[in-house]
Image (cartoon, rainbow, N blue to C red; front, side, top):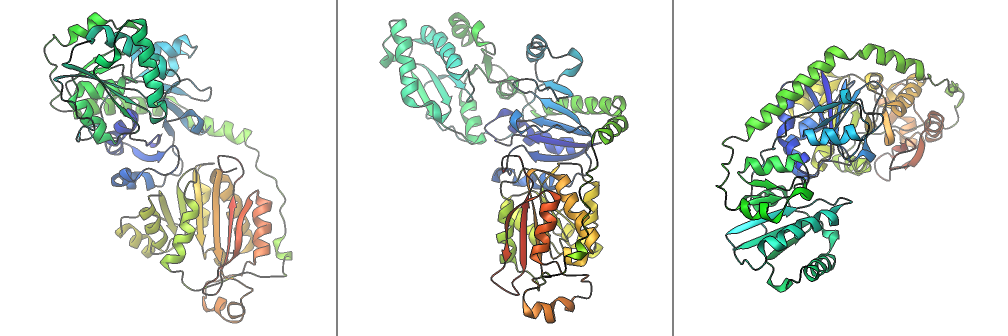
Length: 512
Protein backbone atom coordinates (compact mmCIF):
# COMPACT_ATOMS: atom_id res chain seq x y z
CA UNK A 1 0.00 0.00 0.00
CA UNK A 2 1.23 3.51 -0.83
CA UNK A 3 1.27 5.74 2.26
CA UNK A 4 1.97 9.45 2.42
CA UNK A 5 3.32 10.52 5.81
CA UNK A 6 2.95 14.29 6.26
CA UNK A 7 4.32 15.70 9.49
CA UNK A 8 5.76 18.77 11.19
CA UNK A 9 9.49 18.23 10.71
CA UNK A 10 10.48 20.63 13.53
CA UNK A 11 12.65 18.42 15.74
CA UNK A 12 11.65 20.53 18.76
CA UNK A 13 8.53 18.33 18.80
CA UNK A 14 8.53 14.83 20.23
CA UNK A 15 6.37 13.79 17.26
CA UNK A 16 9.08 14.86 14.81
CA UNK A 17 11.77 13.13 16.86
CA UNK A 18 9.65 9.99 16.73
CA UNK A 19 9.25 10.35 12.95
CA UNK A 20 13.05 10.24 12.63
CA UNK A 21 13.07 6.64 13.84
CA UNK A 22 9.68 5.73 12.41
CA UNK A 23 10.19 6.64 8.74
CA UNK A 24 12.86 4.03 7.85
CA UNK A 25 10.95 1.32 9.70
CA UNK A 26 7.64 2.10 8.01
CA UNK A 27 9.39 2.32 4.64
CA UNK A 28 10.54 -1.27 5.17
CA UNK A 29 6.97 -2.61 5.44
CA UNK A 30 5.01 -0.32 3.11
CA UNK A 31 5.60 2.07 0.22
CA UNK A 32 6.17 5.24 2.19
CA UNK A 33 6.53 8.85 1.08
CA UNK A 34 7.66 11.37 3.73
CA UNK A 35 6.61 14.99 3.39
CA UNK A 36 7.19 18.06 5.56
CA UNK A 37 3.84 19.66 6.41
CA UNK A 38 5.19 23.19 5.96
CA UNK A 39 8.03 24.18 3.67
CA UNK A 40 11.12 22.12 3.06
CA UNK A 41 12.50 19.79 5.74
CA UNK A 42 15.34 21.27 7.80
CA UNK A 43 18.99 20.50 7.08
CA UNK A 44 19.03 17.85 9.82
CA UNK A 45 16.63 15.68 7.78
CA UNK A 46 19.06 15.24 4.86
CA UNK A 47 20.00 11.64 5.87
CA UNK A 48 16.37 10.75 5.07
CA UNK A 49 16.27 12.79 1.84
CA UNK A 50 15.35 9.81 -0.36
CA UNK A 51 12.20 9.23 1.68
CA UNK A 52 11.21 12.88 1.13
CA UNK A 53 12.04 12.95 -2.59
CA UNK A 54 10.34 9.63 -3.35
CA UNK A 55 7.65 10.11 -6.05
CA UNK A 56 4.18 9.05 -4.98
CA UNK A 57 1.50 9.03 -7.67
CA UNK A 58 -1.70 7.81 -6.04
CA UNK A 59 -1.26 7.14 -2.30
CA UNK A 60 -4.16 5.37 -0.64
CA UNK A 61 -3.49 6.64 2.87
CA UNK A 62 -2.41 9.99 4.25
CA UNK A 63 -0.93 10.01 7.76
CA UNK A 64 -0.90 13.62 8.95
CA UNK A 65 0.91 14.83 12.08
CA UNK A 66 1.19 18.61 12.04
CA UNK A 67 -0.57 21.95 12.29
CA UNK A 68 -4.17 21.44 11.18
CA UNK A 69 -3.95 24.66 9.14
CA UNK A 70 -1.70 22.66 6.77
CA UNK A 71 -4.02 19.61 6.65
CA UNK A 72 -5.31 19.02 3.13
CA UNK A 73 -7.55 15.93 3.10
CA UNK A 74 -8.13 14.32 -0.26
CA UNK A 75 -11.30 12.37 -1.12
CA UNK A 76 -9.30 9.63 -2.85
CA UNK A 77 -7.18 9.04 0.25
CA UNK A 78 -8.00 7.65 3.67
CA UNK A 79 -7.04 10.70 5.73
CA UNK A 80 -5.70 10.00 9.22
CA UNK A 81 -4.77 12.62 11.82
CA UNK A 82 -2.06 11.56 14.27
CA UNK A 83 -2.26 12.97 17.80
CA UNK A 84 -3.90 16.28 16.75
CA UNK A 85 -4.83 18.99 19.28
CA UNK A 86 -8.42 18.84 18.02
CA UNK A 87 -10.59 17.01 15.53
CA UNK A 88 -11.17 17.90 11.87
CA UNK A 89 -14.47 17.17 10.08
CA UNK A 90 -12.71 15.76 6.99
CA UNK A 91 -10.52 13.26 8.85
CA UNK A 92 -11.47 9.62 8.30
CA UNK A 93 -9.70 8.49 11.48
CA UNK A 94 -7.79 9.95 14.42
CA UNK A 95 -4.86 8.05 15.94
CA UNK A 96 -3.74 9.00 19.45
CA UNK A 97 -1.07 7.77 21.85
CA UNK A 98 -3.08 7.44 25.05
CA UNK A 99 -6.56 6.29 26.15
CA UNK A 100 -6.93 9.65 27.94
CA UNK A 101 -6.55 11.51 24.64
CA UNK A 102 -9.11 9.18 23.05
CA UNK A 103 -11.54 9.97 25.87
CA UNK A 104 -10.99 13.68 25.28
CA UNK A 105 -12.02 13.28 21.64
CA UNK A 106 -15.03 11.12 22.54
CA UNK A 107 -16.17 13.83 24.95
CA UNK A 108 -15.84 16.33 22.10
CA UNK A 109 -18.22 14.22 19.99
CA UNK A 110 -15.83 12.18 17.82
CA UNK A 111 -17.31 8.78 16.96
CA UNK A 112 -15.56 5.91 18.75
CA UNK A 113 -14.99 3.99 15.50
CA UNK A 114 -12.88 6.86 14.17
CA UNK A 115 -10.48 6.69 17.15
CA UNK A 116 -7.52 4.31 17.40
CA UNK A 117 -5.04 4.19 20.29
CA UNK A 118 -1.42 3.47 19.37
CA UNK A 119 1.39 2.54 21.76
CA UNK A 120 3.66 5.59 22.31
CA UNK A 121 7.31 5.28 21.32
CA UNK A 122 10.57 7.20 21.37
CA UNK A 123 12.53 8.04 18.22
CA UNK A 124 15.94 6.98 19.48
CA UNK A 125 17.90 10.15 18.67
CA UNK A 126 21.20 10.49 20.54
CA UNK A 127 21.47 12.75 23.60
CA UNK A 128 24.16 15.43 23.49
CA UNK A 129 25.49 17.87 26.08
CA UNK A 130 23.00 19.54 28.40
CA UNK A 131 22.66 23.26 27.57
CA UNK A 132 22.31 24.06 31.30
CA UNK A 133 25.06 23.66 33.89
CA UNK A 134 23.05 21.95 36.62
CA UNK A 135 25.28 21.26 39.61
CA UNK A 136 22.62 20.23 42.14
CA UNK A 137 22.18 16.47 42.60
CA UNK A 138 18.40 16.51 42.10
CA UNK A 139 16.90 18.04 38.94
CA UNK A 140 13.29 18.41 37.82
CA UNK A 141 12.78 19.29 34.15
CA UNK A 142 9.70 21.02 32.77
CA UNK A 143 9.83 21.61 28.99
CA UNK A 144 6.67 23.25 27.69
CA UNK A 145 5.65 23.89 24.09
CA UNK A 146 4.17 27.18 22.92
CA UNK A 147 0.51 26.30 23.48
CA UNK A 148 -2.49 28.53 24.35
CA UNK A 149 -2.56 27.20 27.93
CA UNK A 150 1.21 27.50 28.50
CA UNK A 151 0.97 30.02 31.35
CA UNK A 152 -1.78 28.00 33.03
CA UNK A 153 0.34 24.82 32.90
CA UNK A 154 3.48 26.63 34.06
CA UNK A 155 1.53 28.16 36.95
CA UNK A 156 0.36 24.68 37.97
CA UNK A 157 3.95 23.34 37.87
CA UNK A 158 5.33 26.21 39.96
CA UNK A 159 2.44 25.95 42.42
CA UNK A 160 3.43 22.34 43.11
CA UNK A 161 7.21 22.89 43.07
CA UNK A 162 7.31 25.91 45.39
CA UNK A 163 5.80 24.32 48.52
CA UNK A 164 7.53 21.00 47.85
CA UNK A 165 11.13 22.23 47.58
CA UNK A 166 11.31 25.82 48.79
CA UNK A 167 14.59 26.33 50.62
CA UNK A 168 16.11 23.00 49.54
CA UNK A 169 19.40 23.83 47.87
CA UNK A 170 19.92 20.33 46.50
CA UNK A 171 16.89 20.44 44.17
CA UNK A 172 16.67 22.52 40.97
CA UNK A 173 13.72 23.10 38.68
CA UNK A 174 14.99 23.45 35.11
CA UNK A 175 12.47 25.27 32.91
CA UNK A 176 12.63 25.09 29.12
CA UNK A 177 10.16 27.61 27.67
CA UNK A 178 9.50 29.18 24.26
CA UNK A 179 11.54 32.30 23.57
CA UNK A 180 8.43 34.43 23.17
CA UNK A 181 7.38 33.70 26.76
CA UNK A 182 10.05 36.17 27.87
CA UNK A 183 12.06 36.57 31.08
CA UNK A 184 9.95 39.48 32.32
CA UNK A 185 6.72 37.51 31.99
CA UNK A 186 8.30 34.55 33.83
CA UNK A 187 9.64 36.76 36.63
CA UNK A 188 6.24 38.44 37.05
CA UNK A 189 4.57 35.04 37.37
CA UNK A 190 7.14 33.80 39.92
CA UNK A 191 6.85 37.00 42.00
CA UNK A 192 3.08 36.71 42.01
CA UNK A 193 3.15 33.08 43.21
CA UNK A 194 5.86 33.88 45.76
CA UNK A 195 3.78 36.70 47.19
CA UNK A 196 0.70 34.46 47.43
CA UNK A 197 2.69 31.84 49.39
CA UNK A 198 4.86 34.32 51.39
CA UNK A 199 8.06 32.95 49.84
CA UNK A 200 11.31 34.77 49.14
CA UNK A 201 11.87 34.13 45.44
CA UNK A 202 15.60 34.79 45.86
CA UNK A 203 15.78 31.46 47.69
CA UNK A 204 14.29 29.51 44.78
CA UNK A 205 16.47 27.12 42.85
CA UNK A 206 15.37 27.82 39.26
CA UNK A 207 17.29 27.53 36.00
CA UNK A 208 15.63 28.70 32.80
CA UNK A 209 16.31 28.22 29.09
CA UNK A 210 14.21 30.36 26.77
CA UNK A 211 14.13 29.36 23.11
CA UNK A 212 14.53 26.42 20.80
CA UNK A 213 16.87 23.52 21.55
CA UNK A 214 18.42 21.14 19.08
CA UNK A 215 17.05 17.62 19.72
CA UNK A 216 20.42 16.37 21.02
CA UNK A 217 20.58 19.32 23.46
CA UNK A 218 17.04 18.73 24.69
CA UNK A 219 17.72 15.02 25.15
CA UNK A 220 20.97 15.90 26.94
CA UNK A 221 19.00 18.09 29.32
CA UNK A 222 16.50 15.28 29.84
CA UNK A 223 19.35 12.83 30.49
CA UNK A 224 20.67 15.16 33.24
CA UNK A 225 17.26 15.43 34.94
CA UNK A 226 15.75 12.94 37.38
CA UNK A 227 12.09 13.77 36.80
CA UNK A 228 10.15 15.13 33.79
CA UNK A 229 7.25 17.32 34.90
CA UNK A 230 4.07 18.04 32.93
CA UNK A 231 5.06 16.53 29.54
CA UNK A 232 3.35 18.00 26.48
CA UNK A 233 2.06 14.60 25.38
CA UNK A 234 2.49 10.84 25.68
CA UNK A 235 5.43 10.88 23.24
CA UNK A 236 7.48 13.29 25.34
CA UNK A 237 6.66 11.17 28.38
CA UNK A 238 7.73 7.99 26.57
CA UNK A 239 11.08 9.55 25.63
CA UNK A 240 11.72 10.23 29.31
CA UNK A 241 10.71 6.73 30.39
CA UNK A 242 12.97 5.20 27.75
CA UNK A 243 15.83 7.10 29.40
CA UNK A 244 14.88 5.83 32.86
CA UNK A 245 13.28 9.06 34.07
CA UNK A 246 10.27 9.41 36.34
CA UNK A 247 7.37 11.20 34.66
CA UNK A 248 4.93 13.19 36.77
CA UNK A 249 2.05 15.52 36.06
CA UNK A 250 0.76 14.15 32.77
CA UNK A 251 -2.46 15.49 34.22
CA UNK A 252 -0.81 18.42 36.00
CA UNK A 253 -3.94 19.41 37.92
CA UNK A 254 -3.85 16.05 39.72
CA UNK A 255 -0.22 16.38 40.95
CA UNK A 256 0.42 17.36 44.57
CA UNK A 257 3.52 18.63 46.37
CA UNK A 258 3.59 15.44 48.46
CA UNK A 259 3.71 13.26 45.34
CA UNK A 260 6.52 15.36 43.95
CA UNK A 261 8.57 15.10 47.15
CA UNK A 262 8.05 11.37 47.47
CA UNK A 263 9.20 10.79 43.87
CA UNK A 264 12.81 11.38 44.91
CA UNK A 265 12.48 8.84 47.71
CA UNK A 266 11.59 6.00 45.32
CA UNK A 267 14.28 3.83 43.70
CA UNK A 268 15.60 5.12 40.37
CA UNK A 269 13.73 3.90 37.31
CA UNK A 270 15.63 1.46 35.11
CA UNK A 271 16.36 2.89 31.66
CA UNK A 272 15.10 0.82 28.74
CA UNK A 273 17.89 -1.39 27.41
CA UNK A 274 16.66 -1.05 23.84
CA UNK A 275 14.56 1.93 22.78
CA UNK A 276 13.83 0.21 19.48
CA UNK A 277 11.43 -2.18 21.22
CA UNK A 278 8.88 0.62 21.67
CA UNK A 279 9.40 1.68 18.05
CA UNK A 280 8.86 -1.84 16.78
CA UNK A 281 5.66 -2.13 18.84
CA UNK A 282 4.40 1.11 17.29
CA UNK A 283 5.38 0.03 13.76
CA UNK A 284 3.59 -3.29 14.29
CA UNK A 285 0.47 -1.46 15.47
CA UNK A 286 0.54 0.95 12.49
CA UNK A 287 1.06 -1.97 10.11
CA UNK A 288 -2.00 -3.74 11.56
CA UNK A 289 -4.08 -0.57 11.13
CA UNK A 290 -2.93 -0.15 7.52
CA UNK A 291 -3.78 -3.77 6.71
CA UNK A 292 -7.22 -3.23 8.27
CA UNK A 293 -7.79 -0.13 6.15
CA UNK A 294 -6.65 -1.96 3.03
CA UNK A 295 -9.20 -4.72 3.60
CA UNK A 296 -12.10 -2.58 4.88
CA UNK A 297 -12.04 0.61 2.81
CA UNK A 298 -13.60 0.50 -0.65
CA UNK A 299 -11.21 2.81 -2.47
CA UNK A 300 -12.84 2.11 -5.84
CA UNK A 301 -16.17 3.39 -4.50
CA UNK A 302 -14.46 6.52 -3.16
CA UNK A 303 -12.90 7.09 -6.58
CA UNK A 304 -16.28 6.64 -8.28
CA UNK A 305 -17.92 9.19 -5.96
CA UNK A 306 -15.07 11.59 -6.59
CA UNK A 307 -15.52 11.26 -10.34
CA UNK A 308 -19.21 12.06 -9.97
CA UNK A 309 -18.50 15.14 -7.89
CA UNK A 310 -15.48 16.30 -9.86
CA UNK A 311 -16.79 18.04 -12.93
CA UNK A 312 -14.37 17.63 -15.78
CA UNK A 313 -13.46 21.17 -16.59
CA UNK A 314 -15.21 21.99 -19.81
CA UNK A 315 -13.10 25.10 -20.23
CA UNK A 316 -12.64 26.57 -23.61
CA UNK A 317 -10.87 24.40 -26.12
CA UNK A 318 -9.02 27.23 -27.78
CA UNK A 319 -7.57 26.60 -31.22
CA UNK A 320 -4.11 27.80 -30.31
CA UNK A 321 -2.92 27.12 -33.84
CA UNK A 322 -4.57 30.46 -34.71
CA UNK A 323 -2.00 32.25 -32.55
CA UNK A 324 0.67 32.42 -35.21
CA UNK A 325 2.11 35.91 -34.73
CA UNK A 326 5.16 35.75 -32.45
CA UNK A 327 6.73 32.36 -32.09
CA UNK A 328 8.77 31.17 -29.19
CA UNK A 329 12.15 30.25 -27.87
CA UNK A 330 14.94 27.70 -28.14
CA UNK A 331 18.38 27.60 -26.66
CA UNK A 332 21.46 25.57 -26.05
CA UNK A 333 22.39 23.61 -22.95
CA UNK A 334 21.66 25.26 -19.59
CA UNK A 335 24.53 25.39 -17.18
CA UNK A 336 24.37 24.56 -13.51
CA UNK A 337 24.40 28.23 -12.53
CA UNK A 338 21.39 28.88 -14.75
CA UNK A 339 19.48 26.03 -13.14
CA UNK A 340 20.24 27.31 -9.63
CA UNK A 341 18.43 30.61 -10.19
CA UNK A 342 15.32 28.68 -11.24
CA UNK A 343 15.57 26.12 -8.43
CA UNK A 344 15.33 28.95 -5.90
CA UNK A 345 11.85 29.82 -7.20
CA UNK A 346 10.67 26.54 -5.63
CA UNK A 347 11.80 27.41 -2.11
CA UNK A 348 8.67 27.58 -0.01
CA UNK A 349 6.29 25.85 -2.45
CA UNK A 350 3.70 23.68 -0.65
CA UNK A 351 5.02 20.24 -1.66
CA UNK A 352 7.39 18.18 -3.81
CA UNK A 353 8.76 19.34 -7.15
CA UNK A 354 8.77 17.22 -10.31
CA UNK A 355 11.39 17.94 -12.97
CA UNK A 356 9.93 17.00 -16.36
CA UNK A 357 12.71 16.12 -18.81
CA UNK A 358 15.26 15.80 -16.01
CA UNK A 359 18.05 14.49 -18.28
CA UNK A 360 21.20 13.60 -16.37
CA UNK A 361 19.89 15.15 -13.17
CA UNK A 362 21.64 18.53 -12.94
CA UNK A 363 18.51 20.28 -11.67
CA UNK A 364 17.75 17.40 -9.28
CA UNK A 365 21.25 17.60 -7.80
CA UNK A 366 20.77 21.31 -7.17
CA UNK A 367 17.40 20.65 -5.53
CA UNK A 368 19.01 18.04 -3.30
CA UNK A 369 21.76 20.51 -2.35
CA UNK A 370 19.04 23.00 -1.39
CA UNK A 371 17.20 20.33 0.60
CA UNK A 372 14.08 20.61 -1.57
CA UNK A 373 12.37 17.25 -2.23
CA UNK A 374 12.30 16.62 -5.99
CA UNK A 375 12.09 13.73 -8.42
CA UNK A 376 12.62 13.58 -12.16
CA UNK A 377 10.79 12.26 -15.21
CA UNK A 378 12.54 11.58 -18.50
CA UNK A 379 11.60 9.61 -21.66
CA UNK A 380 15.18 8.36 -22.08
CA UNK A 381 15.74 5.23 -19.94
CA UNK A 382 19.50 5.88 -20.03
CA UNK A 383 18.98 9.28 -18.41
CA UNK A 384 16.74 7.74 -15.76
CA UNK A 385 19.48 5.21 -15.06
CA UNK A 386 22.10 7.99 -14.80
CA UNK A 387 19.94 9.83 -12.24
CA UNK A 388 19.39 6.69 -10.23
CA UNK A 389 23.14 5.95 -10.27
CA UNK A 390 23.59 9.38 -8.63
CA UNK A 391 21.08 8.34 -5.93
CA UNK A 392 18.43 10.68 -7.36
CA UNK A 393 14.77 9.77 -7.75
CA UNK A 394 13.64 9.47 -11.39
CA UNK A 395 10.87 7.79 -13.36
CA UNK A 396 10.64 6.90 -17.06
CA UNK A 397 8.06 8.94 -18.96
CA UNK A 398 7.28 12.40 -20.28
CA UNK A 399 4.90 15.23 -19.37
CA UNK A 400 1.92 12.88 -19.87
CA UNK A 401 2.92 10.99 -16.70
CA UNK A 402 1.40 13.90 -14.76
CA UNK A 403 -2.01 12.41 -15.57
CA UNK A 404 -1.20 9.60 -13.12
CA UNK A 405 -0.44 11.95 -10.23
CA UNK A 406 -3.14 12.68 -7.70
CA UNK A 407 -5.01 15.98 -7.70
CA UNK A 408 -3.35 18.71 -5.62
CA UNK A 409 -0.40 16.56 -4.56
CA UNK A 410 2.64 18.52 -5.81
CA UNK A 411 4.25 21.82 -4.88
CA UNK A 412 6.03 22.56 -8.15
CA UNK A 413 6.75 21.43 -11.71
CA UNK A 414 9.92 22.37 -13.57
CA UNK A 415 10.03 21.84 -17.35
CA UNK A 416 13.19 23.17 -18.98
CA UNK A 417 13.29 22.81 -22.77
CA UNK A 418 10.44 20.31 -22.87
CA UNK A 419 7.43 22.09 -24.34
CA UNK A 420 9.10 22.70 -27.74
CA UNK A 421 9.29 18.92 -28.14
CA UNK A 422 5.49 18.46 -28.13
CA UNK A 423 2.66 19.67 -30.29
CA UNK A 424 0.03 22.23 -29.33
CA UNK A 425 -2.66 19.88 -28.03
CA UNK A 426 -0.19 18.11 -25.78
CA UNK A 427 1.18 21.45 -24.58
CA UNK A 428 -2.30 22.58 -23.56
CA UNK A 429 -2.97 19.25 -21.84
CA UNK A 430 0.37 19.51 -20.05
CA UNK A 431 -0.36 22.96 -18.60
CA UNK A 432 -3.93 22.02 -17.64
CA UNK A 433 -2.73 18.79 -16.04
CA UNK A 434 -0.09 20.73 -14.14
CA UNK A 435 -2.78 22.97 -12.66
CA UNK A 436 -4.74 19.89 -11.57
CA UNK A 437 -1.88 18.17 -9.75
CA UNK A 438 -0.44 21.28 -8.10
CA UNK A 439 -1.56 22.36 -4.65
CA UNK A 440 -2.85 25.91 -4.27
CA UNK A 441 0.22 28.14 -4.27
CA UNK A 442 2.15 25.59 -6.35
CA UNK A 443 4.24 26.73 -9.30
CA UNK A 444 4.81 25.65 -12.91
CA UNK A 445 8.08 26.88 -14.44
CA UNK A 446 8.63 26.49 -18.19
CA UNK A 447 11.77 27.43 -20.14
CA UNK A 448 11.92 27.24 -23.91
CA UNK A 449 13.92 28.70 -26.83
CA UNK A 450 13.32 32.38 -27.55
CA UNK A 451 11.82 32.78 -30.99
CA UNK A 452 12.52 36.51 -30.89
CA UNK A 453 16.26 35.78 -30.90
CA UNK A 454 17.42 35.97 -34.51
CA UNK A 455 20.04 33.22 -34.14
CA UNK A 456 17.45 30.91 -32.64
CA UNK A 457 14.86 31.67 -35.28
CA UNK A 458 17.19 31.26 -38.26
CA UNK A 459 19.16 28.23 -37.16
CA UNK A 460 19.47 27.33 -33.49
CA UNK A 461 15.98 25.99 -32.99
CA UNK A 462 16.30 23.57 -35.88
CA UNK A 463 19.63 22.13 -34.73
CA UNK A 464 17.64 19.79 -32.47
CA UNK A 465 15.88 17.31 -34.73
CA UNK A 466 13.35 16.46 -32.01
CA UNK A 467 11.97 20.02 -31.82
CA UNK A 468 8.32 20.09 -32.92
CA UNK A 469 7.43 23.76 -32.76
CA UNK A 470 8.35 27.01 -30.99
CA UNK A 471 6.19 28.57 -28.27
CA UNK A 472 6.47 32.39 -28.17
CA UNK A 473 5.96 34.12 -24.85
CA UNK A 474 2.55 35.67 -25.75
CA UNK A 475 1.29 32.19 -26.60
CA UNK A 476 2.58 30.75 -23.32
CA UNK A 477 0.92 33.61 -21.44
CA UNK A 478 -2.37 32.75 -23.14
CA UNK A 479 -2.06 29.02 -22.41
CA UNK A 480 -1.15 29.62 -18.76
CA UNK A 481 -3.92 32.12 -18.03
CA UNK A 482 -6.56 30.13 -19.91
CA UNK A 483 -5.64 27.06 -17.85
CA UNK A 484 -6.14 29.04 -14.63
CA UNK A 485 -2.59 30.03 -13.63
CA UNK A 486 -1.58 33.44 -12.39
CA UNK A 487 1.57 34.44 -14.26
CA UNK A 488 4.05 35.35 -11.52
CA UNK A 489 7.17 36.00 -13.59
CA UNK A 490 8.04 35.99 -17.27
CA UNK A 491 10.68 37.26 -19.63
CA UNK A 492 13.89 36.47 -21.45
CA UNK A 493 17.22 35.40 -20.01
CA UNK A 494 20.05 37.89 -20.25
CA UNK A 495 22.59 35.21 -21.18
CA UNK A 496 23.08 32.64 -23.94
CA UNK A 497 20.38 32.73 -26.59
CA UNK A 498 18.00 34.61 -24.29
CA UNK A 499 15.72 31.69 -23.48
CA UNK A 500 12.11 32.48 -22.66
CA UNK A 501 10.89 31.67 -19.16
CA UNK A 502 7.48 31.84 -17.54
CA UNK A 503 6.37 30.95 -14.01
CA UNK A 504 2.70 30.35 -13.26
CA UNK A 505 1.25 30.01 -9.76
CA UNK A 506 -1.93 28.14 -8.93
CA UNK A 507 -4.23 30.56 -7.10
CA UNK A 508 -4.96 30.03 -3.42
CA UNK A 509 -2.81 28.70 -0.59
CA UNK A 510 -0.22 30.61 1.39
CA UNK A 511 1.24 31.96 -1.86
CA UNK A 512 -2.08 33.28 -3.05
